[in-house]
Length: 228
Image 1 (tube, rainbow, N blue to C red):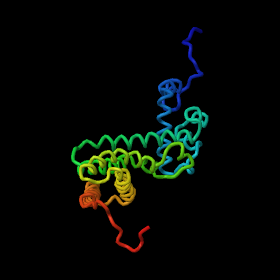
Image 2 (cartoon, rainbow, N blue to C red):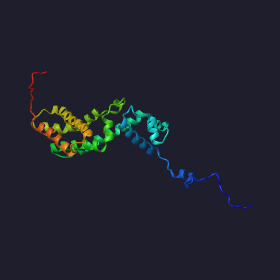
Image 3 (cartoon, rainbow, N blue to C red):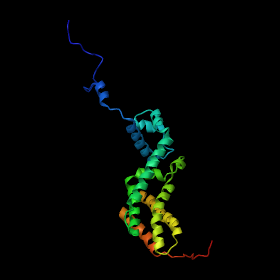
Image 4 (cartoon, one colour):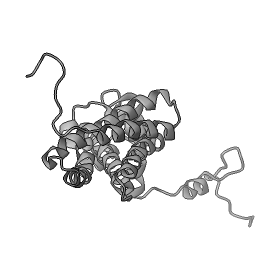
């Protein structure tokens, strides 16, 4: 008998959906999209568990791919970690240097303090990664080296101020390290306690730094017994 031909090989999934159509509806990620997905997943896991506590297996499972896909994009966990750290270092350095726009030194200090605290608040996972130690730190940089980069930006500002006030400009690098280090360490502490408010933390940091610089002695002397 001449009936209508049917394809019994195609069945629905029990919910009225054709699985072949459903598969077609799922667009395959491009290489760039997959790479960004792996970076986002790696960033979250590295922040939560550190480098040693994160495995390629878990990264792949979270992404819904096989382990070889991770190796294809990054060569392994070390490569993925290196890219994550490099991105976070670039982000923080860009935020700090981009914030230094004011002309008055005190306002510049405020802008630098706010920039670091903003980064800590907005990119907490990234900050957790930067302040952790890892076996691949030497190849990717460390938080200390990043602070050094930021201090170099501040060094130029302090150098001009030192010259204008009759101080030895050769000391500007040391003072810039001290100032930036003070803000960075306070930022690490604030990340855990989140008190007081960010603006108040910035105000107190600048209060200590500015009034300390304002009353700076040209030739500071030690008051204790030790002289060397």
